[in-house]
Amino acid sequence: MGERRVNLPSGGVLTDREIRRAYEGGELVVSPWEDGMVRPAALSLRLGEHAFVLESDQSVDVADRRTYPKMLERLPDERGRLRLEPGEVLLAPTLEKVGLSERLAGLVDGTSDYARLGIGVVLSGQVSPGFGRRKPGVLTLEIVSHLRHPVLLRPGARICNLMLFASTGSARAYDEMPHNYSSDQAVAPSRLADHVRPA
Image (cartoon, rainbow, N blue to C red; front, side, top):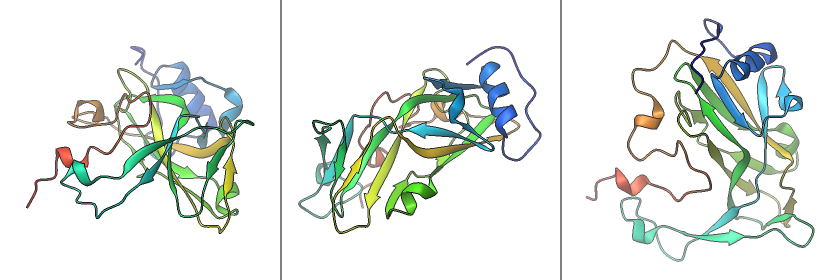
């Protein structure tokens, strides 16, 4: 992250001016950056291409990686669209790679445009201070269709919003935590088994 410190608000969500200031001052890294993706109180992120669907054929024990669902690559069709079948879970990266200083935290949420079509765009929500601080990484989205027919998603289209909050700085940044996803350059499988002890 950049060495130059910028003045961030003492609390609350960053607005468009403050998002641009954080980006210009190096507190926020977004690559590729497109100024038109800045919203009044969030930064829109776009859907990347290298997606996977989860397929399971047995009960999943979160402490046993051998039982985890398989990640099957879902390639775009001849028109560049990603097909999502009813009931599937699609793991897809953001097009942008993101890095936050230890003085920023984020929340990711799907957009109402997708929700109004019955498509849920979910992340565990929180983007911790220090995510991607040393090497910006993608955010992995979990996309689920609640419809009875397939959905065709368009890589490169806006799909979620990243709200940013200023903080006083964490004692330990996320990229220093064990088993983190901070600098992932593509969708990665769950690392839950690394820190859940078998009974």
